[in-house]
Image (cartoon, rainbow, N blue to C red; front, side, top):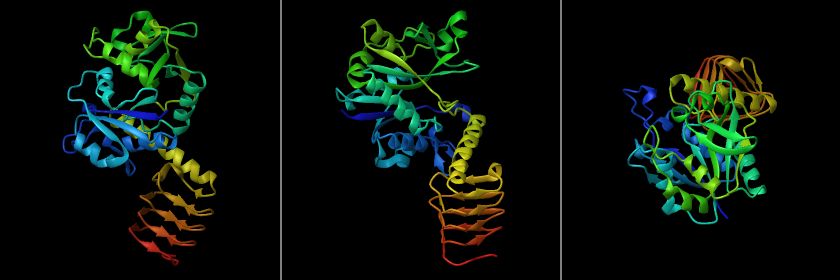
Length: 326
């Protein structure tokens, strides 16, 4: 059995309101990595190396970015998430398991992906849905249940007044056995307000045939949130900034002002290094132990040995092995 990651990345991202930078939404960056790169890294770290990315708008940009990290299929028309998965069927094999995620969810962690997969496999599920409880469920599909039993998923625009009051939502992250995808995806219909093929109808069909469809609750608040506009992009950046800074601080790095310190996800920093306010460190930079960086530094793709001191400077693509700028 192989674990296959399917990434939905065909959307146009019109709410990003881009005029001059006509990028695919999933290629907008947080620090020096595109949104979809965070998703790919989380899938890889969870043990999923076989990926299928569904592309559409600006497909060349996405394919150039990810290169040989994924296979690709093109969704020529935007007819819903179910239609997107229809495009992948020729690449799927029976008796595998697929995890389906959106390419604009950079906060989704490898730990959550692995926990979801483990739950699915350990409980012999045919499909497992990542669910979450939120204060404001507007815009999300609601999980309609009878006690703990899932009955259906209803989208916001198709929900009744009572269904809209439900606060348990569908995060859009699923683990589904590929034999179920191959059997039920061709049976989807577009009898809904949007005239689209909803992937969520798949679960109703599976439940009607007595397949085991269960829900697994997300324990990390808001990590399932997608980035649809510049406000959400900034909010996601803050979460990632906090995660990265806390990781370095717990590993023995002093960050004087975490709110004004920005460190890329591939940066390595040694113990007892002190980073002062308004510092930016990106790329595959490696910072030795007992260094002093900042205030007001910009460092990109540079390597510093131990005990280097840098402040008020832009340093790019350099290898420094002596003390500097005391």
